[in-house]
Length: 575
Image (cartoon, rainbow, N blue to C red; front, side, top):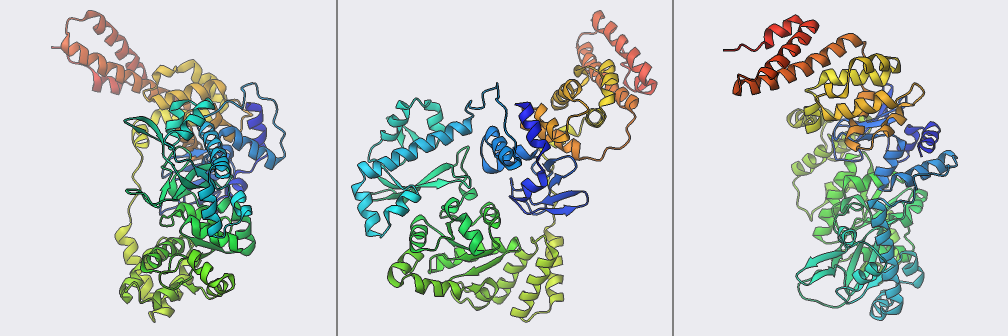
């Protein structure tokens, strides 16, 4: 397996790989971007072209090209490896470690695929009412097949029994979010509903939405999958997997709210559409779409709630320096009902006449914002735009629309920036590791100078390390790192993601000249001082412990050899 990994990484440029998912900007010898793994205002995600690794100094996540693809697409490590191997033209060798061994993610993906097959079969064999409903909404068989629509049986245990018979572990089934625990046992979440599978950008089914078919008390029109290891609601867009290439070709995306709106738009020929799954559009969803277009058209419901949601979404889009327009449908109309009543050509006119967000906000009377509210809303968004050119263009647009000088807007923007500027809090792990700077220094030497390994091995053992994380890094680097190993491969020496993150951070730091002998001395001193403090605590309680007193003298002699000053400060004064 390691030969496969090394071969793929050696033929892969991490900047090209990550740049195909998120926009990167050069910052000196590195590249930077807002982190795709957590929300942040300051770009702290760094990609090193020289070392072929990435690291976010905000949330701490780090890795190489393979782990980025794995985490971004939520696929297994082996799937990410295969994907990059195909991209690089590398043929993977047979792997003795059995790449088919299922990870937790793989198991959940398989559960969802088997579930979707079950729902699709149910629609054909038992879903006459669901099929009639789709026919009444003029949804074609081709669209049903393409989008893989299904039907969940009106049963509390049909799906559970089906998957259990397929030899899935009950614990894995509970982790899938497809079942609930009740007083009567494990029951299906989705019952007697039209089922919409939600696909990830790679085509894997990660969740479901279920629409009610018969009126029921105490239940909503839709039931949606909860958050699981493979699904977070605000991170996916319904239908993007099927429309992403058309979005790229047409250079614009229509964003609607729900499944049926998407279905109607897609069925009518608007195949550059996605649905936001009933949530406010999130930065993660915008990042997904930004791969395919920078032109966003909001086509939400025509009532006040829909317009308000479209404005909130447009603000988030504006923060990324992207183009956003709003399509205002008549009151009480949504894309589904509008198309049924008026047809495709009429909706196309509305799309062609979509209003630029700034103009929309200027003329809007429904939300009843004051002019000051509107300007504040726009400036709050502008201050988060990283690109200075985009920021200046938008400031100019605001000044022209509201007849204000650019200087006054910039002055107001600077006041806001000063008022709300906050430093990111360092993580708990970072705070803890800051106590062991000597240990970090020796790791830095070992990572950057393989010739130092023999000397360090002679002088230090892992029990000199007080930090468990640095101890793990020390042991792996000292005995496994060789002079031909690329920086991106070093991370593969560690299975623990937290340890990988720390190693990546050290690799991305500058490597100042550190005198090896001094660093070894400092680590030994830290260890001896720590041992001495522990012995002193025990001696205070047991002053007649001759064995410990003898051990204490040996430690003081070792400290004295390294630094007489330390001995004078740490000597224990016996009564």
